[in-house]
Image (tube, rainbow, N blue to C red; front, side):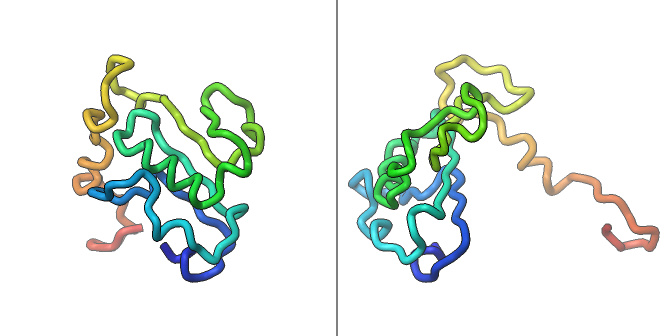
Length: 128
């Protein structure tokens, strides 16, 4: 994390910070960082198996000082000015039971990325 070593304007964490295989919820190396906690924002899905360590690390970063996690789909902006958003929205087009783990969600848009047609700028081989 750059924000651990350098002061940056903003930090946005998408389902992170996690550390696979770490035995504690909060990762010790996360707690010390030079970017102020007020500059961190996080978004995670509540069906991600790693949500407990992600939330523990957000707390370790000091993000909990700005309010409890809020579900953006049930709140109006500015979501109580929290810096932590945890959603339960199912990706569009997916038909899943409420208990389906996030790991089982389809990654169709990501898998299609390599086959996505890109518009040409007019010259063969050019990509706009």
